[in-house]
Image (cartoon, rainbow over all chains, first blue to last red; front, side, top):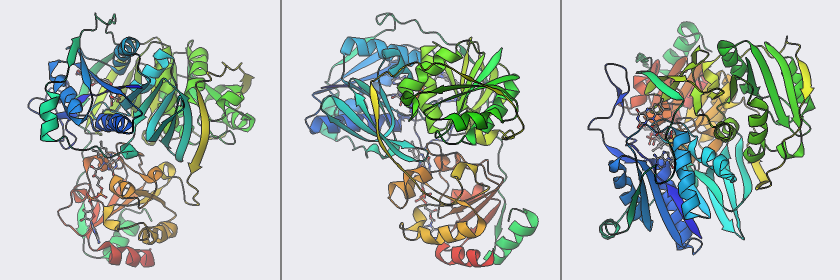
Length: 249
Length: 309
Ligand SMILES: Cc1cc2nc3c(=O)[nH]c(=O)nc-3n(C[C@H](O)[C@H](O)[C@H](O)COP(=O)(O)OP(=O)(O)OC[C@H]3O[C@@H](n4cnc5c(N)ncnc54)[C@H](O)[C@@H]3O)c2cc1C
Ligand SMILES: Cc1cc2nc3c(=O)[nH]c(=O)nc-3n(C[C@H](O)[C@H](O)[C@H](O)COP(=O)(O)OP(=O)(O)OC[C@H]3O[C@@H](n4cnc5c(N)ncnc54)[C@H](O)[C@@H]3O)c2cc1C
């Protein structure tokens, strides 16, 4: 079984972003970038499926400028077999990413496609569902457990009220939640080996996709700042403040 | 043009999240229809018809919609919704699961998790775990949007008198099947709707220790939440996670106990009206957003607090 994993290059999750002074966007100059944490979990899940003998090949794909090859290399070091970069310097909204992924899906014909449930920059939580709709595939979003057996993927999903399990006919799309697994660290020998693994570069034109968007970004502003309040000295003082000052209890 | 709101429900009753979505719809236009897709969901349609500002309720009652499977619901919503100016749903796990599919079927971008409506085509939404607010304009013929409930005041659940119309089901995609669910049973208020939330973090140490938070919560009539660290460590189930990738809450009072205040956690609670932090580390970042901070050992402070409120 072949698994396709989509990975996105995003700001490192430890970095607190700042909005540019002219409010056009956030400032990403010289900011540490990394593989989106949910995508890392997606790669790990694919690698585990391969270790269990369920998956035979793992292809990782990323859309974006040349720098996203770094994240593809990270995924290769974690155990993916080969990479595809779809080279574009254009702003990609989720629908555009989903259209590119659909084209890659049609070329590669994987049985399972694993994505992160959301990218921690735009926090959209859309791409996997859009890909599934475009390709006419079932989806298991926010997965905390994936079992592949007899042509089906049984996916346990983290939903608002608890957990839900669905059975999906393959091929299917899965998006990862935080508790699906804990990604391993890439070892140095594997990082070296990853440098020699194949990485193809394609363009949206090669894939027959024209990138468009119906969304324009008018401005980006910092959120309203909360003022730090006071420290209270005792539980009694806290109760007094909550009752008489804040009037919330 | 009219606005279509996808109702969130469990086939028996309408989820209050829908009331905030109708409020957002009112800010974008005035003729608001609600689509109830479910199985044996007549009572939900009756409830939706009474919601303030709703002029029409469309019901599609079919076994294919019993568990809100996205493969089945999305084709119906896209079919019914294509003549509308906007299609809105709550940014709950159900809305997030279905709406991007609807957008893709209609070949339009989706705008996720809006917190403000500036005009019929311009919306505000948090990005980067709420560390920036983007204002985006959509030129899509149908604007597909999910709404962050805590950012809008619910419309009244009663007072409306909308007509109820049946719409034909769009069939079963037969690519997915519901196997089962494990839903948390709790007598406490629902996390995203509660007026007071008490949350515990890694500092709680283990699952049994959460009992002291439950006692405090029951005294206050509060819901109980948790940080990711507490959920990952298995202290409490996943549906209690508050944060960027969990639930977004904005109660009158949020009490963070043994939580350090990572940006991903703050993203889920910093719109709360009053924040209280109880932490033994006076340098913990949670104190930077807390209205009232108490530097103390939670195992002493929490039981004392429970005794005094
Ligand atoms: C308001 C706004 C402003 C934006 N501004 C800019 C901008 O200035 N510059 C710019 O370059 N982009 C910009 N974007 C695009 C944005 O950064 C994302 O690239 C786009 O929205 C893709 O969706 P997502 O990452 O939010 O997807 P999500 O649906 O949150 O991501 C889910 C998963 O999809 C997969 N995925 C997403 N993107 C990729 C990818 N590129 N390659 C491989 N897999 C992927 C990953 O597995 C990821 O975990 C903007 C988007 C919005 C909404
Ligand atoms: C992609 C991604 C998404 C994430 N999403 C979320 C999310 O949605 N929600 C979320 O919460 N986190 C999320 N996180 C995790 C987040 O970064 C933090 O790791 C997490 O919030 C830490 O939880 P905590 O505050 O309970 O634990 P810690 O940071 O370990 O803090 C524990 C605190 O308890 C205090 N303490 C310990 N013992 C006592 C005592 N006896 N009395 C008083 N205080 C005590 C300590 O001083 C400390 O401040 C995410 C991370 C990533 C990478």
